[in-house]
Image (tube, rainbow, N blue to C red; front, side, top):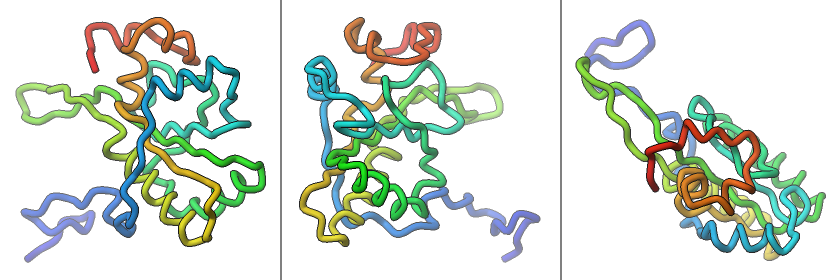
Amino acid sequence: MTTNDVGVVKGEAPKPWYAAYPVQRSTASTITRGTLLSWMKKGKVAGKDFVLVDLRRTDFEGGTIRGSINLSAQSLYPTIPSLYTLFSTAGIATVIWYCGILQAAPRSTSQTEWWLGSSRGRGSRAAGWFADYIQDQNDGRMESYALEEGIMGWATAGEEYVEMMDEYNASVWEGKSK
């Protein structure tokens, strides 16, 4: 077998970014957008009562859930110990991870197709890795969740959700459904 100039064996697809890290041991727990919205309407504040982590990188567009921090999933794994220390020291007991937006990628040379991303990929992977770390610390207080349906589900669920977004751009979401 021969390799090309970026080290990929010819005939093999490049490995996904997450292949460099261990498979999460924990199955990610999930939280619904309705539960999160209820918390926010009752006065719970992201960054104080819980942390929201938007894992999007190149697909970071259309806005983000109010109070979220943006940490790329692709660079997350090595930072988990530091994030745990920061969140724990701040008294945060709940961390919610999400991604999920319509992404364009060429599937053939003749067209670009759209497909739905969701927190079942990056979000659940991050939630699982963080849950593993919490478990390794014997921390029975902190919890790690993936947001069901990700940002796509949030941004297309109606006005009460959109009102809880920063930098919302309707043109990104128009005509797209969850």
